[in-house]
Image (tube, rainbow, N blue to C red; front, side, top):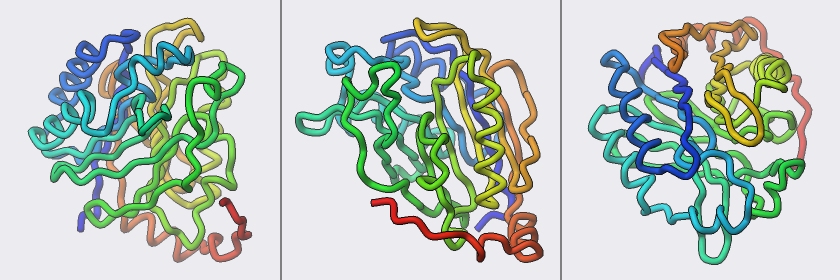
Length: 261
């Protein structure tokens, strides 16, 4: 168990459709982290960019043992760091926007994005995930993850009984809505008394421009992420501080219950 969890959000400038190039850039950023980091978070669909064309999405989709996760497992083991992100996944005849969390050991957790961004046509290219956000344990921390548009739906991310200590959100969120992105993440941290990492991309695509705007927030809603460079936002999270705050200010005990599924 680790009291301190060293985390980094890596703001890739994603090259659309270039899996090899994007994986190489992700590895370069992970390699550049000082020794001892526990978690590196990558943006939504980090290997391909945000694709909503059904034909293109289907052509880029891959299985859980395909190119993307095979490479990420190797990187996680080699640098002894857990890696979180999302990719275009194929499962039988369905295509999903699938989040993953891969430990250095190779243990992997998945989540299929539930709230698809219909304004961009994401719901035409992908099947909606129907399982609630996962909660899993890593180095003594309880962790949950979700994807981009999910952050707008607080009942979906409700932290009943303090089931998670850290919520990770990976995104493809353009600058035109950056104010909402930042404040939604802060709100999710405050109401769930949890750390939140929001990892966004940089660069530009057909949906807009991206300045990164990744943030790491503590349970009081304070921005604690520090910019290491234009691609890396980092912070050390303290389990002791989190437990102390929840004990002194036990608002989670008053939370309302919602049936999600």
